[in-house]
Length: 217
Image (cartoon, rainbow, N blue to C red; front, side):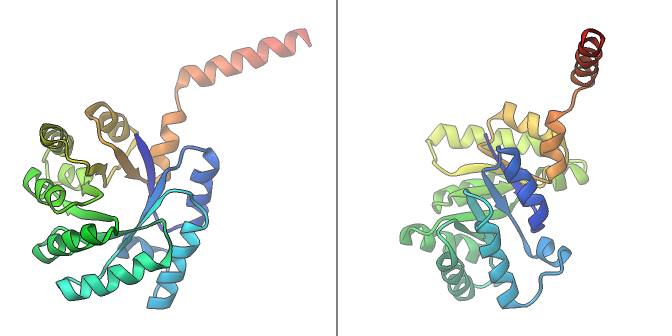
């Protein structure tokens, strides 16, 4: 399972990279705005800065909602850096753009996926990644993890190469559950990754080891 961090914060990206388990980064306009990154040129520069920190894929999202606009933006994003994956919305023109990019050899991430049917269309269009938003489904009392299971079943049925990128991951148990269900990738905050480190028995065991060492040394 690949670990992506869902942020535009360079310090958090560096921290995750230094942990040694980071495989990539996902971003979106909301995350950029959260970090105060505004203006077309500044946003593009920030994507390059992220690529220079990590070794894996970096999803960069288009703003346009029409086919022609997505193609223009997506081609420009793809030219920024070889690690860039063009992030497209799950709408009709988004699927058209996904097909266009897949035929051009440009990698894509179809985002804002909330149903198995949407995931099926993305795979048919040749998406590199599909991003089902499990946390947002949980927010409306719908089982987000069940969506991961349904997509995994469909993709396995037909040997689709599209990778399931579990998005809107909120906490550590989301990570564990997605791993159990066979998600190819998870993207979430740094806290969801670092939470995997924690267990009270590890803490108490280490404290005991150190205590016993001090007694004899």
